[in-house]
Length: 404
Picture 1 (cartoon, rainbow, N blue to C red):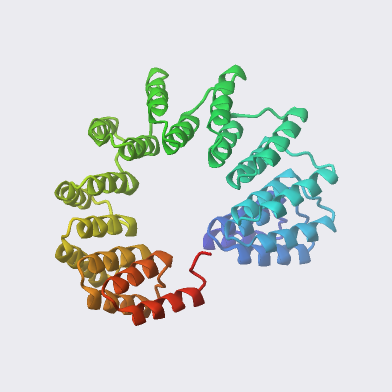
Picture 2 (spheres, rainbow, N blue to C red):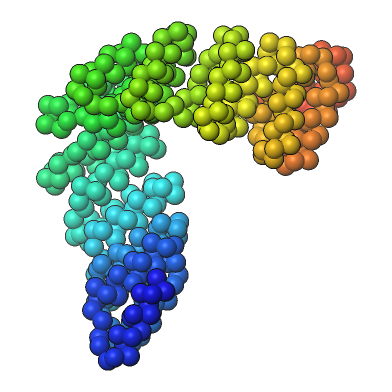
């Protein structure tokens, strides 16, 4: 951008007047580099010099502000534009509505959409998709369906993204049959389901414990020459593992590699969890080593699975070694990892070690949750440490962690 502004300065010195396209290009460049404040300062400067700007300018600045999570500032800019000669358009409104939904401000996003319609600015397919997608993720299906009806009345044709969003919403509220109906309706509407649509269906069916139906759809993908991606495979692997069909999974892993779809940390976590829960700890450790060899960095969930698996089969020393190794390597351990280790120590009757770890946990800024408290209280009661157990119970109540 330094070179671009150097050229711009020379243009001005030579007495030429840059076009709005040139000015927009410079502002877009700054926004793309995350220098949105500089873009706004440049905007103020050129306006003060009497240059005229257009809807593209303000669409660029609003988009830049939303990309750096400055949605409030984007709305303020929209209000400023309303008072000037350049009027807001569908792009500006849609950008802010999208940002509001991403900020979990669904009601505000919907209100801005209503304002847009009241001002006779017609939403486009992109606007409708933002609304339907955002509302569905919030589980507000009825409202999403109302928007879909408005979309159809406005002759804005729903696409695969629109209907896929609706399927996500139905699965969130456990309305599996409605999700299946939307999926089957896609073809009748002349919309070809894509990998995203299939992946949503497979994920949703697996989560609803309807793995056989998910397998049928997976086979249908192959017949339609739609290549499953890592997300699709991982969803199906998760469904098979949770239904106790881990023996069927290894063929899928081989197929993934043959199709150049590499397992990711989510895939490995699913496999490790299934192996640990079926008491195949040695195989889980072997798989973990392969994961490291392939350059896939484990996350906290990976480590928690292994530590919990080790504790549950009584290999407390291995769990402690793994736990200490994580601390030495600088991992920021979460409440689930600490809880798994505390549970393992308590099960082995190592109460002093568990209490020491509890203190370390709080010293490191990680607060125990209700499960951690319950584990500790039960372990203390089993050892007839009633006074200490009561102290933990009072603390649990004080922190608002005891369910009524």
